[in-house]
Length: 457
Image (cartoon, rainbow, N blue to C red; front, side, top):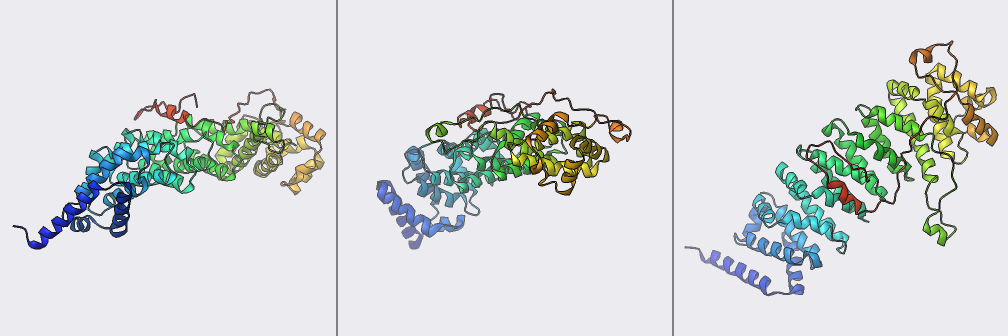
């Protein structure tokens, strides 16, 4: 027989549950406020003591109300926080299982995809998904099997909250580790984020890709174009993270393709008139960064990245010389329309001149004595002394570095003229990708397949 004390506790629980069952929105909101205030941080035994071993009865009511009302944002934030108290309770694995049995993961993911819901509600949903992922490998697999990366990538791209985006990044990173069955899917999802219009999302995706690189091993060839594409971002933090990822990828098989792409970015297509966006048409003082502005930004970022990569590895520097990087850097130095291209190209060129004597001779021959002296004395500003005629001569006369290393190192070999007709592929990426297209990027995902980001990106 139960004691009088236990009977009284059970009676209080029944009264509490009946009060919840009969309450309307305002009263339930008050009940949730009191529950969150008095039970946050409690363990499973403490919650059971609070509810007379009937805590699961209240959790069942919370999840049932969530299923019925999450599309209408009825006390959604408080409801999710209350459920979070159960899921985060130490030794409360059974609460997690009970939540998952009613389709909790799918509900949380659907919340992320509802445009009319508040950012704070979606962020709370991400926090609950993180609690699920922290429970172990099979729970990470459950999120991925429920198209979790699709919803997370969508939210990362569209969210206007930096805090929410950081929460998504942490969750994506968690799904990418200790989850061998779906780690490639996570990696592909991050690649799919790169061409988006949100610089913060790009930055976070690049950071996560870098962290995941050791986990996935060899990078897919589909990564090359998106990574080079983000170099056209006018945001320096995005360019920095792209360069850091490029450094991590130099030990992978995609290195030749990345280096070739970087060198190609130094010689963009012929100059075009500036393109203006709709806002510019309405307000002439507003200039949107469209081509060729983004192409020049990309050129400058590529020149800067080339210098960083060359200084990291002599082997990489030699490969870049084989790809005629000296020609590309000199073309960028002659770009009078973009000072940043001139500065970064000049600084990178200085390294090659000081490191490789044959490059020094080629550059000296192309610049002439006076300009070369200015270059050696002040590589960060010498290009300001060039006039348009000299810049045009520089682009048209620049000597290429020979492709054959034996020829490069021979002091008797002449510096051949550049072949300006060589094909240069432009990896510039548009920043106007519709968010809904991200959904299409996940439709072809396979657990271990090689098909990564579809061509329609």
